Length: 438
Image (cartoon, rainbow, N blue to C red; front, side, top):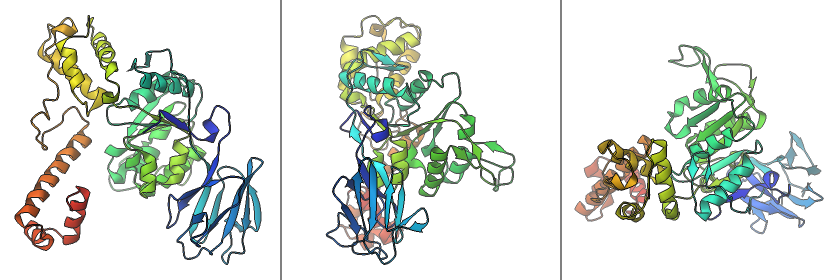
């Protein structure tokens, strides 16, 4: 995440932005091309500006160009036609958000993102987020701007960087303060319950639905819905989520009618969603809808100058005047890489206070940092991380160690290793590739 924030056209302070044509459904999901005053040709010919592998797409299917703030689409004599809103068009003038169909491929006109340049905020905190570093004061400046409107925000950052704190502060400093703030960890939901949690369900809609349930969208009515770990939403649910965000209407599982909702949506992700789009694991149209304003929260190791003020703030929240945050204790905190970020730092402070309830200042604390992983054990339990991530790290560590020893015992013979492990050969090959062992 090389920039503090990026914005798509509708969120840029100037109100303008460049455009791109993105494949949102079809064999080439995620491919995109810039739209400008030069005619851009779409087709299956390798010489086209946007090359599609859909066999129903003509070699030169249609062209598109930007003209006076609009987009002119011209069909180039394609055999299956260029379709807009259910009708074949020979020429059409479109706007942002328009979706075209050619063959089995759907393409949407969306704003291109641009780096958002802001002056660092003079503030040293935003809600419960604390920071004196330039990186965090730039983040504060963007969040201050975002709190003045209902713009949809995507918060990206590693576990523990404060995405939920940022979302809550956006809510509390915006016009929706006093209304509900609902946070949903999409990555922790069982796949078969994601729709029910988001949209609700009626009694008897599925096995185990013993009563009606109001979904997160309706629970957040009038307020803010924070969808954390958005990359954990299954692809088949992403289409319904996009519709709910765009139209602000939801249909509970098992219901026939839709219900209007009034919510501001803020999304969070541990990974760069643009990368998941390129991998085909996340719908590009949903990505462009939630990343109107994208903010990257820096990891704690990239802003170590914030450790002392964060520690001071944590101690004050616990009723302790910190005194000088300096000396050997601070040196120990500086030396750690903080894979769990601010959440891990908070746990370190809480652990020290639990072991020394008589402590009255930072200098009184005997800090134990990184004890879970200091022995280099890949199977060590990382209690400072969320349950799902801590579990996944243990599973990954076990898989790497098991596979490495398995291959070594069979001198790299994949077939023999698969037989010995009781694994399908293709599955074993996939696991080896996952851990970079093959």
